[in-house]
Length: 486
Ligand code: NAD
Image (cartoon, rainbow, N blue to C red; front, side, top):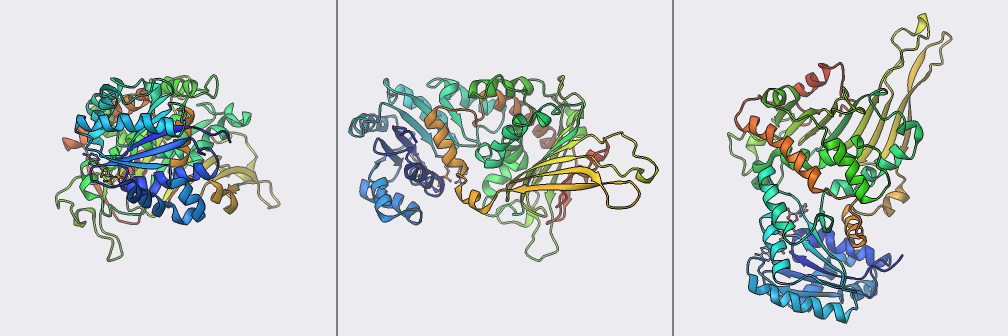
């Protein structure tokens, strides 16, 4: 591969994400040759640390993934600066370091600023990068922003305004790691790479679309954050919406990031916004109760969760797009904690054939379903109608199955490796853009408001089941049912 020279300035260089994801991902890019000699990483955090100790942190995080020689060579590209992101004075030091390292490693003036610190700092850091002159004028300047991007439309817009004061939207790479998942990236390949699917990807052939992001775990150690967010903000506003973007979008005029975003935005602008009554009619919320096992406590019995919490750990709902392609086709989305299984998937439910195969086949035809399995095992299932082996002519549903092989699984890059690689290439195809993010916030705000005012029931569901019964009713209203049932 072609080497991608840069200096990466990482805010939050000693944090959990940096150690667990970012250093291993950068190391993979190094082993593959995307990073060679012409790169440097500056890690910053508040506490004092020297370069040697910082490099030791980096070496430890990747020790298992390469030879001693590779690990040493890679870590030698890392420098540390103790820095308080809230103190403008500290940025001058970083400016000098950037210039010095750019020269030392001949990095072409390319800069990525990666904000891996608490979200409340994002806006401030972006503004300081600009005001304190950290940007290069010879290469590119790009900003990578961790999640969450705001907590409502209002706070997201405030953040966006702060980022925009220094960076244009094509320089901002908002991380949504679901967009970095192998099988999410496979959606456009399957959809646009096969005319038989592309041509039928519309209301004439598709009955409904289902996106499931099911988790088996409960809230674990994250109650402090989770109880202020809930499933709606934690999973629906970002991940579910971004997956729906790939599924619902118009066909882009080319496979460039600009055209992909434009095609997604065209469909997002046709999303039906709900008023209070429509929220209640189209969305349901739930919270996990106890399960059959003793350890399956209810959500409100979990550590650091208030006993009277009405937080949603489950959400299901119906999205509607009002355009030629989709009018009348529900997009169902659901997510939840402590469900029967961990499963991330998309099910495209096709309409049933109306062909009459005669008297022995009454009601035997099924709705064909194309399933794109994302986690824990990537794959594609396609259920089709075929003939049963009986003497009388009747049909039955058969399943064609493909899943990612063990060899391919080993080769599959972690989402963070892809996202870093794409940002270095300036490819925003797999990042959320502001227009999409703002529409999803406006949509989600309406739901959050109805729930905050307690104008919709909160259903307590049994742990280790597929969640709220109300969500089954939601689909039944339009003659549909969830394909994945745990
Ligand atoms: P963390 O608390 O482990 O690390 C935060 C880092 O910021 C530390 O290096 C800390 O020293 C530094 N820091 C804190 N205050 C600072 C200040 N005033 N000035 C300079 N540095 C300061 O957090 P994390 O889990 O690594 O998360 C980082 C970001 O990534 C957050 O935005 C989080 O929402 C996001 N994120 C993390 C994960 C994950 O798996 N850890 C997953 C998704 C998103």
